[in-house]
Each structure stands twice: as C-alpha cells, then as structure tokens.
Length: 600
Image (cartoon, rainbow, N blue to C red; front, side, top):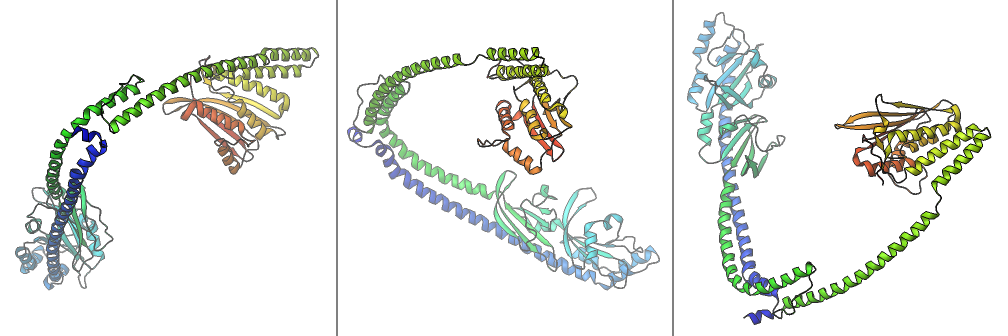
C-alpha cells in the first residue's frame, strides 16, 4: 500500500479522496438541508407571528368600534346634552339631574372593556360629580384637549394615570368633542379602555406585544417595563397601512418582529401593533445546532480513518520541511537521499538544485560587493579632489574685506558698509548650509542685515520695524536657518518695490499656547499693493504644488516644504491680503529650545 501511494500525487492521496468521497457530499447535502430547515422554520415562525398580530388587530378593531358607537350614543344623548348646557341654581339641582340619567353608569357597569368614562366641561354650573368633571387649567392646557376642541371627529390617544396608591398606569382612550347646540360651553368626552380587559383578551402566549396610538408611547405591553416607551422599531407614520415583518435586535437578542397599523373606525388615528417572538430565533438555532453536530460526526468518523492513511506521509513531509527550514536559515548542508518517488521527492530534488543555485549566486554577489566597494572608494577620491578645487570661503571673505577697506580708504563709507553687510550675509548663508537649525536671534539678525542692505538701495522709501514680545529671549529658541529672509524679500519684491514712499515692513515675534503646547508666531507684514482674492487663492495653491516651470512664489514654496519636512503637522503658514492694504504672512512653529551643533 505505501508503494502505491508513493507513485501518486500527494494532493490526490490526501485531499481528493477524502473530499470527493466524504466531505463534499456531506457538506453539500448538509448545507442544503440546513438551509431548507432554516427557511422552513423562519417561515413557520413568521406565519405564527403574523397570525398573532392579526388576531390582536381584530380584537382592537372590535373594541375600538364598539367604544366609538358608545361615544356616539353618549354625545347625542338628550339628557346629557341638557346637563352640559343647563343652568343650575344649586349644586343639589345638577346632582339630582345627573342621578336621574343612568346611561353612563350602565355603560361602565355593563362593558368590562371600559375602565372609566369622563366628560370634561367648562360649564360653571357644574363643579364635578361622578363622570362629569370641571375643566381646570391643567386639563385645558393639554394638547389632546385642545385638539378635541379644534375638530369634530374622534381620535385615540395613550394616556397615563395613577391609582389611589399613586401607581402609574397607561391605557388607550377615545377622545372627542361633544357638540353642544345653542350653547357657548364646551364639553370633551374621554372613554378609557380597561388595561385588564385588553390583557385578558391579548395575553396567553409567549409573544411580546407592544401597542401604541399614532406617534404616542406604548400604552399596552406584555412586559410592564415597556409601558410609556417608544415603539422599538422605526414606523413610517405617513403610510396609512404600514406593515413590516423581519428580524430585530432588542435587549441584545435577535427576535422576529411584526409591526402593523390599524386604521380605527370613523377616525384618523392609527393604532400600531408590534408583536415580537423573542425565543423563536434561538429555537431555530438550537435545531440547526443539533443538525450541525450530526453533520460534524459524519465528517469526523471518516476523518479518523483517513488519519491512519495520512500517518504514512507525516514522516516524509516532516523530513522535507526540516531540510527546507535548514535552507531558510542559510544552512545548505542537506541530506543526500530522500525516500520515495512522488512529488515530495521531486520537491526535495528541486530544493537541492535551488540550494546549489543560491551558493553560486552568493559567490557572484560577494564578487559584486567587492567591485562596488572599490567603485565607492574611487568615487570618494574624486569627490575629495573636487572639494579641494573649490574656492575656500575664507578667501572670499578676505577678498570682500580687502575691497571694503579700499572703499573705506577711498572715502566711500556707504560702499564699505554695503560690502560689510554683504560679507556678513554670505558668511551666515555658508555657515548654515547643512545645519538643521539656528537660533531665532541669529536668524533675525540676518534679516536685520538684509534690511540694512535694502535701506542702502531704497533709502527712506521702505522702513523696517521689529515688534518682539516683551520678555522673549530670542537666543533660547531654534528655527530653520534661512527661513525668514525669503519671506521679507518676497514682501519687498512683490509688495513694496513699486512703492514711491511710505513703504513699511513689520517683523513681529510672539508666543502662543496651542493644544497645551507653546508655539512661536512669526509675522511679516507690509503695507504694499496687496492681492485680490483670486491672486491670494492662486498663491496658496502655488506654495503647496510643485511646478518646476514656475518662476513666482518659489521662495514661499521652498519654505513651506522645508517646514513640512522638519515640523510635520506642528507648523502652520497663513497668508492674508487685501488689494491696496498690504499682505501679512504668519508662520507658526513649535517653540523648541535651541541646541547648536546638529547637522543635517
């Protein structure tokens, strides 16, 4: 038997036989069986739930219709009309009049579905007796009372009430206006349906029933804790015959739910019945779990038998894996023979060839590294020669100093000063090339020198002013070198170069706390020509977008990119301008302490 398996493919030995004969048929048949069972159980539970919901609809329709007919009899009963519109000299008169008419008492005693009948009236002659109550300010201010007075039809509403022990309850009540002919008084009839009667008619199963009227809270619930809450499922109140059936997550459990709308008789009100089966979904999954266990057993037993067959290959696969692991650790001393004549042995042969190729490639790579190192040494020698041929910066400084002294000797002090400032500026630029940062004091001194050169050029056409926050020590803070001078130069070139007189550059430095961290706010402001909104938008776009063919805004673009690379998200650059009023560039950076000596 091992000899036969050695001549066939491993995938056919282990997977095709077991999968084709055992796994695939059992899984396919089992999946179809589980799916069919699931759908059948879901449909069965849904049908039961919809039947229960329809049963409750029928009960509520019968009760509300009967209560409506009773309200019709009460509203147009002649003796009740006489009581509501009557003028009584004493309290005893209207009490005797009410006692003579037993219609309301008969309804309350005969119809168990009626908990209470109340007639609210603003007739000052009626102070309240039995079913008749005087309309006080609290009742008159309710929305349902105002609604009843504003319409002639009836409507249904969920109302809360308390018993003599101050226990809180909810029930469904019919509300309607009693038309009083030839009278200036008003009367509103309210008939409360008994919650105990509804419970006796509706309860009796394991379903959770939640009932509400219009957009009001739940007035009936199989679980009393749900009284006064909103319906759990979203309801389209604009749809007069809304209905929904599906699954719903409630209290962390998946339940079957059916919601339907009941249009009450001779009324615009809708009663929404929500029926939930909280246990049905769990029952379905219990049945499916049992079926799944049966399928699993049908797979496990053949799997155990297949394990005996797979043992033969375990040793050979383990040996191959061991040799491949040695090769992955760069240990290329593999065994010389491998048992078998199938894909495993062929794979081991390929491994031996791969290891031999790796040894050859490593030898070639080592030779290439030696050549690369030689090339690197030659390149360093060439760079050293190029550096040696460059002009010594000290020679440039000494030359400028010689020219300055000659100009000073010749009496041209302005030229001497200009050369001195130029040399100082060039020294600052060359010394900070390659450095990560400089101090804020040195950077501003560089701006001061630059503005002195510009003063020699423009004279009094452009004035320069510094505004430093009181108490700030510029030498304590670091900043990217050569950051501010391009901003000042941009203000002169684009803002003030055409200014004949009165030009002004203001450099200000302040500190500010942002997100519990201190920031430096450096602003450069000019009173030049400014920019239109479109020009400002274009500038803001230019400093974010790289364009090698652009000749404008290069300085601001470079500054923006440098700050992005160094400060990341902790910096901000803002540009504000108005035509004819000048431009303000504001740079916000972290207030980092200066540490000289770091190089880029």
